Amino acid sequence: MTGISLILSESVAMPRSLNAIVSALCTTLALQARPPEGAIPRCYNPVTRFVLGQFSNTPLHMRAPLTLAIYLFGYSSVLFYGKPFTLLCQRRREAWVARWKAASLSPFRDFIRYFEGLSLFLLYSENDD
Image 1 (tube, one colour):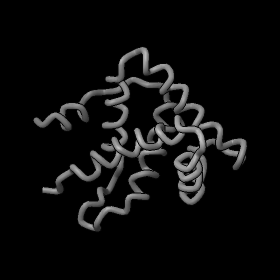
Image 2: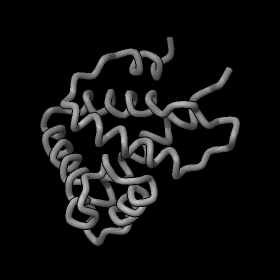
Image 3: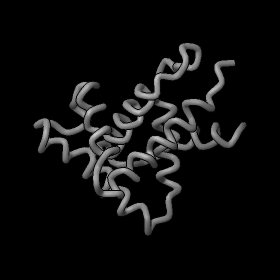
Image 4: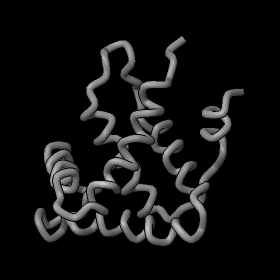
């Protein structure tokens, strides 16, 4: 069993709303990456489980601010689109991610880079053997 497989097999107990936001974000980032046709997984759940596994391994002193940032990301879209991130269509999700990626505040950009790095790491390291 590889390290990635070990992390994927662990169950992660998180609030449903946190899971939903992270899942929507990981799926959006994976779809934006547009990997080659042969590397597109049928489902992005392994990517989400991997990211949530990494989140659960985050030191406690960093987990609270990261949790706050996840909720801020997920619910601040209500101000612009009238819906939380999880209820947006794919086009608006991509626009919301792009807005955070280009934000003048560095923590917003770092937040997207953190999730993008983890999501794409697993997405491109999966083998379809």
